[in-house]
Length: 189
Ligand SMILES: Cc1cc2nc3c(=O)[nH]c(=O)nc-3n(C[C@H](O)[C@H](O)[C@H](O)COP(=O)(O)O)c2cc1C
Image 1 (tube, rainbow, N blue to C red):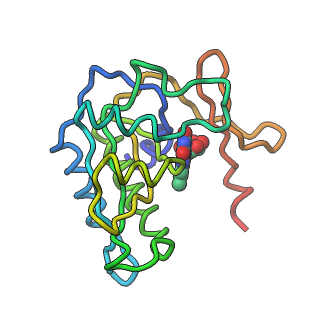
Image 2: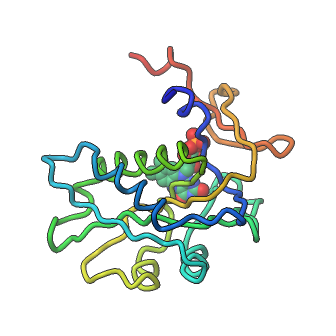
């Protein structure tokens, strides 16, 4: 059920590297993004698939993880994502990248939830070095990376918890990653 999938699909930052992700699997995820609503149906986004070990190793250090837990070095070495999808936009053809932020969110969620349905987990990464990413992935001219989705098989426990003292900051207890979510009554106005 989609509802159960939303409950269980938490951001993951520790992966089982023995689970390789294939190009076909990534194409399947992007195919779901392709079918989603798009502002004026312009469909300005393109996707760079990263699944070869050497490319994953080049991209990983350009991404920043779990800013709220600076004491942890996530993802731990030998527990890194085994693939990434980099959502991009050709700014020459479609103009300012800030115009399509909603499209990026919709497509990112489609990829992320399809990955979950396939038994995989991920982390959306908005904090990354855009210039270096474009360079190491040899993105075409005028193509800017907007959001990265790191993917792999989950190797850590994550759970939703109620807010404590109104705080939404995620934290860890006994090795479990806890994610406070606001209650339904608090968000319906
Ligand atoms: C647009 C966006 C950008 C994000 N960027 C990062 C990031 O750069 N690094 C990171 O570790 N997590 C990132 N996250 C993951 C959030 O921290 C995570 O969604 C949040 O803590 C809630 O946890 P949940 O996804 O398990 O519900 C991002 C999430 C979104 C939606």
